[in-house]
Length: 550
Ligand code: WT7
Image (cartoon, rainbow, N blue to C red; front, top):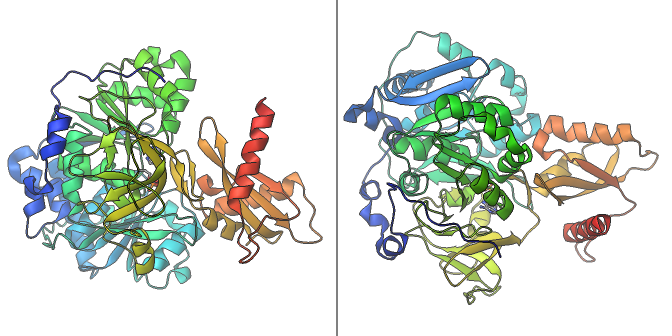
């Protein structure tokens, strides 16, 4: 295999992984020991109280717009949102869904919701009507915060539990009234809900508790390695867990200046933002790094000297991409592994430690990882098995909303959380991703449940049945591919396929729409239960791809 990349030298918060790993206990962290806590207070208000109110909390860039806010100004706006929410009767335990573009208001609305003890449900701005409706109704949300543009995707009669819809434009027009209210919470009480896909059933609401800030803060310190002078940029939208935990909580708990970029990926723009804002830490996904690599020498046109630390998450990070960054930018890319359900980093590469390209890294201090066989026994090093995490740790989800059975299914063996991933661990403790244990699709780092896409497909009048898989793809990791059978009297045409694609795109989200649709006569199914055999579809697809390549 490839060469091991040496640890960096620098003033990192954690420099002796081995001894810290052996001695660290979550109880050593002050946040862990609090009787009552409020995640939003810890994230913003505490810094103002400690005298950092004038520090820049965020740089917002969107096309020609540029806005900088201090911690004090963020706090002032959170106070304003708190006032609006409370005067609309929002109280502890209510679910407030936030459907906004990646802009400061999105972050502020999340924090205001959490500060009054309600549960924030941030939604990705790319979601369309069906996807939004599904999530809001499962959670029986009470309130929705959106803007005029995104709000058009919502029909109020489809979301009967939502008593109040608040528009960003209206909130911002209202005279600022600051309400400093903080609801002090038991650390185990809920604060944040993220919907995530499984291989069966509709997306599930993963509920996180206030105690998770202990995990966010500690991993922000050790893995993101945030220092006071850093400008930190996580490219994910807060509707995804990476965008909330490592785009909002972890950096701000560590008092970092964050970058919020509106708009989509664009290699030139990204390099420009790094140069203009002096970004020093960048957290993104392998797909973005592969795009940057595909742009070749483009990076040479920019001054990227501010960058000192790069991290990656969401899908397998190819060794060649790490080697490219090492050559081109003279920086390593630090892979991290975790899931919506784990609430924070589980497997990490620290800046002070050697990197084995191809490995996701080693367990975060205070967390024990195991590779298990089908009976739940730990396998010897070097063998492939189920990637599991010993319970419990502060970031672990509190429950799956309204679905105890699903929650329990993550813990089939005593004392272990099962991830659904397959992995192997080497003699030095480094863990290597080997694939999924189920049918989940990972396209550009976005987790897509085949069931949700299949359900949408069969709502199209021409589609009889559908089986959806992830087809390996060089840039995106996987793409969504649908095998469908058509109703009788329907002819397969390019227009029909496009209309089916659009159907999913306009109801769920662009990233869920199949990039490839193949019409077949019959779908492979299990004999007894008649379930669609996605694995068989995928196997055939991979074999065909291998033939095409040879
Ligand atoms: C799944 C979780 C919370 C992180 C963003 C995705 C895959 C995650 C890696 C990695 C290979 C990875 C796994 C995991 N995944 N990180 N470093 N290398 N695969 O969160 O949407 O909950 O998806 O993403 O398959 O189970 P998510």
